[in-house]
Length: 303
Image 1 (cartoon, rainbow, N blue to C red):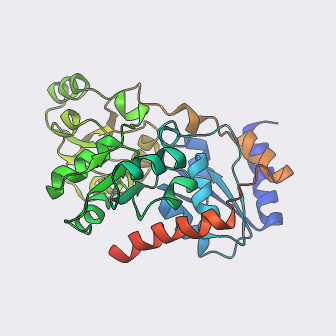
Image 2 (cartoon, rainbow, N blue to C red):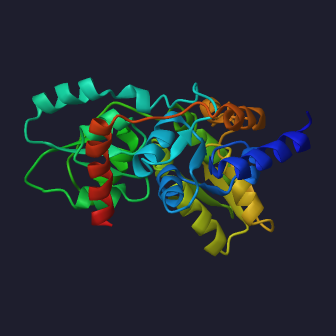
């Protein structure tokens, strides 16, 4: 089948299954174009929970589909490729966190949403890249706090809030591909360009940027800014949506190496196969779901 035939079959099955398709901003362009909703992981899960759809096809990585399953426990959540994982999320396990909590008794635990449901269940409050600063501000200053799994987002939040955090040694391999020289070289070539980078980047990269923003934050800034050129310091899939929504502006990747291979293994063929066979279903055990959702809800109460 060609691409058009595959797309038509997906749309037919989507209607038949009463399904919606979610695509993270880092997905392939053709997946983003097919999706009912495109966005960041938590926002997509929240949106899906408000729909009448019975089936959620999450084109992202495993922890994102887990979050959708937690927020929509009575819906069927499918991940088109079970191998779509997140190296950073894998850098922290629930058992490792339990051991860390023993080293720092009484500590508050802030968990970035880019983590497994089991890790969320061991945490006090979740955060996203857009609200990490506000979540850290809300912490009890008299208690120590563990921030995981991303040390660079934690460093960014600590810097903005002047709080001391116990940082987990995790990181995003994709954002680590963006270096100081990448930004400097592009700024030399495009001196009028705004530099937007993700707070998962290293501090020295963030220091060279005009703004450190989540993917949704980048979209808003690109719409509102009078700048015509932008250097984008995040996974290159983000450029598809930025260009689509702002065709009159120019967007350049900070690094062509900033590619998440896990995001790219979800294809149209995989989405079709997923709807045909209703696989791979993501199920979060109730005992873990209940605790993990509490951490998510506490975050939402803060905002």
